[in-house]
Structures are given as structure tokens and as C-alpha cells.
Image 1 (cartoon, rainbow, N blue to C red):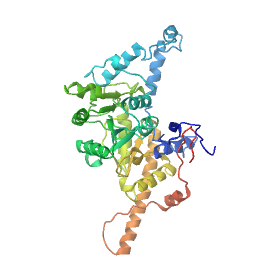
Image 2 (image 1 turned 90 degrees about the vertical axis):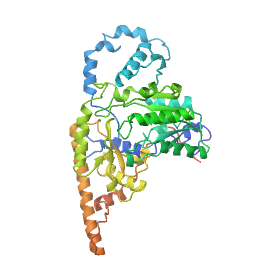
Image 3 (image 1 turned 120 degrees about the horizontal axis):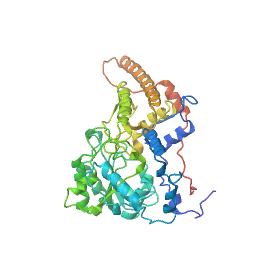
Image 4 (image 1 turned 180 degrees about the horizontal axis):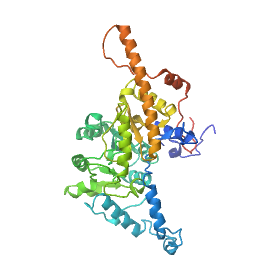
Length: 437
């Protein structure tokens, strides 16, 4: 089709689907060449999908031992007629009560949830979009601390017309949200004549794998109450906590604040991340082992991760491997890692991180054997870079005749050649027809 000719809506053709991002490019690279230990050992290892497969065997065993829980089994068939007809569109009362109890358990029984205040949707994505539709009009904005989940750009912006404005956080304080950063982002929006309707946070953080402390949450509650704007708290990883400090929910903070207008506070939760974990109070002990294997393996070659205590990923620091500390430098390194090292990791720029060189690595969607393969690839890659780096420093010193410790990062020649030969990855396209101008 040469032209759109008004056949499709502006929403269908506005290009705000957010899929033109390295975050989704990495998924496409994996899908076109997926790793398999026997059939494709040189394929791309998927480390860009925050999926927890560690508890699938436990869930499978529970389902096997409780056939009455499924209407697709002979034992559960008597329940079929009870739910086959039209139901209250708010959701089955028993299910709402179960969700409320689960959320209470995840928070250690420190707060209670009213099932009548629970609103169901088709997953976390639907919940976030519904909140955006209900709380803001097209052109309004939410402040979002960086780095943040890349798909928020799609989930909250595409069909709603709502904008997301970054609250820049840095590694100097472990990417914590500060009052100063919030106020700066809010005032900038006002100067730009953008109406801010709320603040959106993820706690535990995706991609950082950290939890917010109580003081930070109190600062956020005070900030939104003073300005009469909303606070949307994505707590999808609330039960995936593997070490101290414990997870503090926004629900605990507002219970202790008599001045808080609870109508301004909204919690998004989903079964996709935490559901099925053996201990929903503290998450699972299994991710601790997996994370330790991965982080200690990285430390052996001088790579560190942000000290996290939650989630299913590591926030990996590769700033020292950049040829230049820019977004272009980060994406050049990322292309080498995806195309040549064959690891799908997600670059920090796709999470709107202001500091080039950080990458999110998901570690619970593969077994230990695959984890060791990934670590071996990383070690080989870093050793090659360090070897080229040392050679470059020697040449530099010899040429200049000095003993300076100036560090020069240079990718090995083999990788440089392969970058020049490899076309840039194309983003997966929306299934909708694109308009042309």
C-alpha cells in the first residue's frame, strides 16, 4: 500500500508502539537464531526476557496433585457450569478474595486489602494502560524514575496519548529517587506547559533489581499529595525478594500516613512474575543461587552488577568496556554482544538510563548449564577485549614515549570487522499497517 488514505486510525499509525527499540531488537535476534545445547549450541542465548522458569516444576507438580482445581479435568468438571455463563464483569468474588489474600501474604500480613477495591484486567499491561486512560488525558504526563521498563513506552503511551517524562537517577547513589530529581522533572514539565498527572514507579525495580526504602516511598507519597497528583506503584516483583532488605509496599506507607489521600495511590500487581513461588513472603531461595552463580562469574573478569535484592535480573555495569561513553558507544558494544557473542542482553539506553554502559541481564529463564555457557562466552569476550586493550596501551606508550596510564578501549579486530559487515538489526514491526507521508 503506497498511502494510508485514511483507512486506519491515527492510533494505529502513530508509531508510538515503542517497538523501534534495541530492547525488542534483541528479542528478534534470539527468535531468528535461538540457542539449543544440542541442536544449535552457537545460537543466541535469551537473557533479555524477565521470565521466571525456576518454579515451573513446582507449579506442574501442584497442578498434577490438585486436578479438582481445573475445570478441564474430571475432578473439576462439576465447577464448569458455575462459571460458564455470564459473570459479574468485576470478576469472580472468590477470585478477587484470593488475590486480596495473596497480596496480603506477599506483604507479610502487614496490610489488608479490600477485595471490593481490586480491579482485574488482562495482565499487568492491561492494568497499566487502564490506569493511564482513567487518570490522564492525551497530552498529560507521568513522571517516571530512570532507568525504567522499556515497554512502558508502549503500554502507557501508544493508545492513551499520555507522555512519560524521565526523572533522571544516577549510579552515584545506586539510582535512588530523590526529592530534588522529582522536583526538577516536575518544574521542567510545568515550564514546557505539560500537565503532570502522576508519578509511576516500579518497586521492586525493573531493571535494577532493587527495592525502595521506606524513606523514599514516604518522599513520593508526600510529593504527590502536596501536588494533588497520582502515584502508580508497579509491584509486580513484590514476592521475588531473595535477600535483605525486605520489600516495603506503598500500601504499608500510606497506612501509617494519616494525611495521605489514598484515592491518589494505585498498585499494579500481576500473577505473571510472583505466582507459584514456594514462599511468597520472601520469594524463593532458588534465584539466590542462580544470581550468585552469575554475579560471581562476572566478577572473575572484572564485571560488577548493582547490588540488588529482588527481581529476576542483574543490572550489569559494562561502562569500562565502552570505546566512548555515549549512547552510540553503548549500542556498538551491544551489537557485538548480540551478533557475535550471541547473548541477548538489553542496553540501558532502552530503559532511558542516562549513563551509557549499563545492561539488564535476565537470569531465571534458563537452567544452570545454559547460565554457565553464557558466562563462558562473556569471559572469552572480555579476555579478548582486555588483550586488545593492553596491546593498544603499549602502542600508545611507545608512540608517545611516556608512562601514562591512559586507558584506551579497543575492540578486537575480528569484532570490528564483523560489526562493519553486519547490517543493523531491524526492529520487529507492529502488525498494523504503517502510514506513509
